[in-house]
Length: 337
Image 1 (cartoon, rainbow, N blue to C red):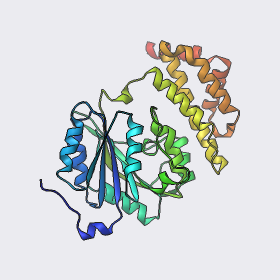
Image 2 (cartoon, rainbow, N blue to C red):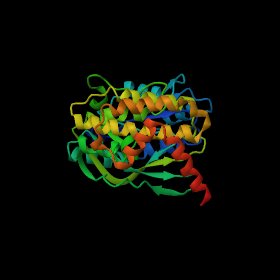
Image 3 (cartoon, rainbow, N blue to C red):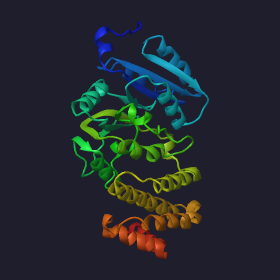
Image 4 (cartoon, rainbow, N blue to C red):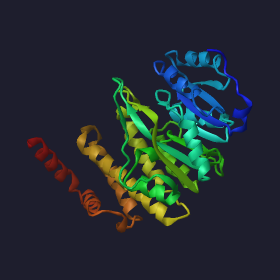
């Protein structure tokens, strides 16, 4: 393939920076980058951030530079996903930013449709649906929960869905197009270095900076499911980082109390997940009191009107110490059926 250079028509469109962290994904680099260079929206800056790969991924990125003048490679020491994304943010020149993971890829019209959705509504963030893809070729579109709607939304509506029913399309950094100012405002926002759940730490703060968010139903982001991916492993650090994420949310005071209440409710649901982990895995049994302490702190500020009866019962059982016994009974009943 010969080098691709921008024409006059492309230069008139706003520059979109596509930021791609690359770490030991040699088997997927060509598929990912190929989907970027074949976008119907052509005024792109493609930043491949090689995060100290040891499997030849960095060399594959360098080969792509020879094929397309829009591609730039940043080689750095391994610092993790957040550090790689942050390096891309600092280097990016575009008025708009989008993140794509190195083992995923996007549909040809991804940038065009997200930009059109953003521009049509003067939105600050636009997002699309995602499609799961497995190594055997199976695909399945994500089914957003009841409450998610298409079109232009206010930040309060989006945060209510994110922290209420939960929606994968809202809680991740990829599948979105952001105005650059969302990250570079005062203070600038960056992903937390060295942490798991980096999107959980940051995304609600990014969404809160938007005045409008445009949602389109098209599944344009292909989310590849790898058995050896870090999201399928669970360690002490995963547990600790999720606790830190909950702690961080307790210090968030947005301009609207309702937003804070929905975030507190979401943090409480994360506590439920951790508490269940404590009883599912003996390795984490000694951390039940830590989670109980977080639940207690959340309930000092969270209004009970934001909780369902089922959630109130869970809170009561955790605080009085009856959750574990009831959970074991439930597991035995399930096993006997």
